[in-house]
Length: 244
Image 1 (cartoon, rainbow, N blue to C red):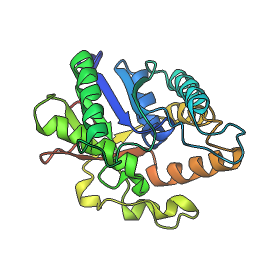
Image 2 (cartoon, one colour; image 1 turned 180 degrees about the vertical axis):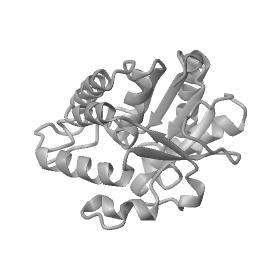
Image 3 (spheres, rainbow, N blue to C red; image 1 turned 90 degrees about the vertical axis):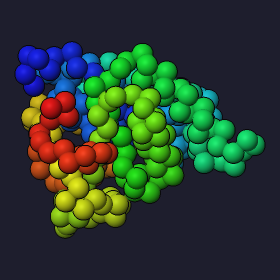
């Protein structure tokens, strides 16, 4: 990052604490090189119960995951996370009026955009990574705000091409991929950024066992090969930086 790029603002928007793992070394890279980096979570992930972690779903688990997200942010060298207060798993519920929870999400996101005025936003693609409905709906909310003119931020969807997952094993080998033609921005990171990402994974003890952390690390390290790929929301943007 050049001196002119310092103090740029990067906002990552995701559904749950731990979703940021998909772009973690990029967050570390921009935090290290002078940008103000934030992660906003739509929910606290209070329904994310795992067998290895003896906390039932509900407020206590949500508070635990918020604490984990704050620890992960410290490891990445970025600002404390923002929590938008939606209920985990509620975004797609049928409501009266229709879309009540999604409207609450877009309103909360708009306040964040007005306050931070980010230069760039990263979020899930329409695939939601592996099809998770909350992931997809968060992407919908971000895209809606950008296309209605609620922000002038550049929007990027993180993606993994079929070539990047070729030969991988385990659950993420079924990651919903993006054709490489559309992944035109590739952001490099250093080994130090990757190490920061690895430390951040270990903060999410409610979600990951040591075995799943090792798998996560192995999968992403192979898929990324030193660069995280993004699809610009609009326009034929090509390059190696989210701000240029």
